[in-house]
Image (tube, rainbow over all chains, first blue to last red; front, side):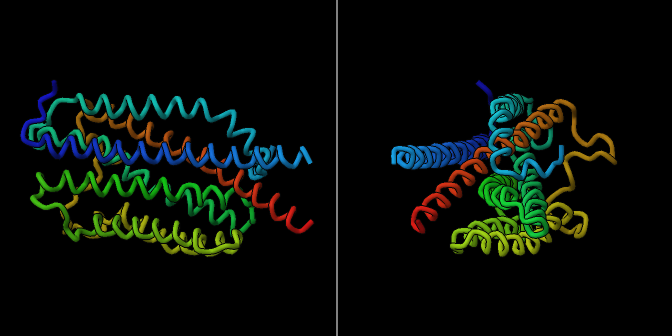
Length: 50
Length: 241
């Protein structure tokens, strides 16, 4: 286990906040992309079927 | 082949689809490797374990400024040549830049408290970064507030030009005003070694990782915007028919 000494809060909070924000951004990007792709595919399929 | 061919949405979707797996793999290796390696580096003799924050703080701050510059270039291409993909790329980049700026501000405050004895100081670099963050929020809000996409692209392009002053200030504030708390650049090409190689190499890896992460997210988000635009065009055509 890494000993962060008396600055453990600053280091762990930085990594925690940073990784949570990056993770949230990646999740939001992928979810929005999947939603847009599904919506377009559904519409194009419906248009093809008349 | 002309560079402008990539401004065609169909061509962009083809090329970006082929690029994405490779760029994403590089982003994962660079970001996870850089941050993991950085976290395992030994403590600094003055800053103790807080030196590990540099591996998040510096790449995020670097990207916060560079993303705004990329948005400026894309906005200028839209304003001058009216290529829709460039306007959509600028729109897609803004939330990524806002998150990078927020990470830089949050990690800076967490680092500043034990090192400077304060979470925040109205220092030139910190203040210009806060204004840059507000510009990102304003840019995103302006895109959402205007219904017509071409008008939104025009107005956000102008906002991007104005905000570029603060992006440049964020980068060079420590050189303009020397009275601030924030130190000069951690890495410099001109002034030789400022940082031990123990920290420099993982920092380079994290910076490359953040750059590739931005490119990955930018490609995905631009593809999302193109799909949304296509769906809106199809729905508008059906309504007219």
